[in-house]
Length: 181
Image (cartoon, rainbow, N blue to C red; front, side, top):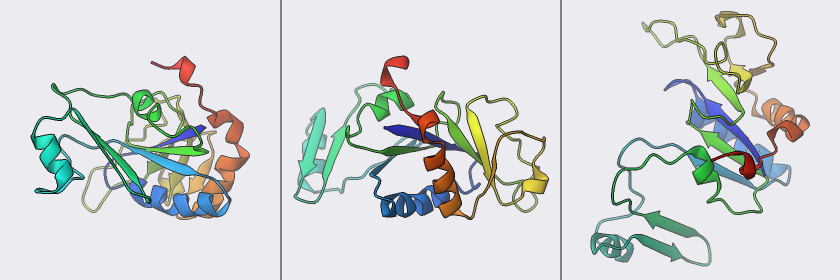
């Protein structure tokens, strides 16, 4: 499996880029999974459904499956902050690419999604300046980057070119779970 993160500040376009990359990689015959960091409480279940009722009754895990999909919901007795590596370990072993959204401070190689700022906002800092795990920058404002960099600067709006760069650079994104906690 190859792993690449997409990091950047809120509103920079991480979700949109990942959403555009998935079909491009799939069209090239690759199986793609996504690991996404969510903040605090989120739910994929619906009040009153059987799986919700099982969780409400105290089940630690509920696995629900059909002939189309599988979902696992696990309840933590105490809050726990899982690492990106723990989440990657949950993925199916036949995945070609795992796209990690969020986990800005993780030690996976990542593409920084950078935009200078929103309307009236102060300029956003760039992660690549201090983060050795940023391997490239995807932006629609390359002239606005705060520091010159030798890293590749990719067009945020060209998912085809970013996919090509990822595939051409593939070996560097090989994931070795033994080297992580």
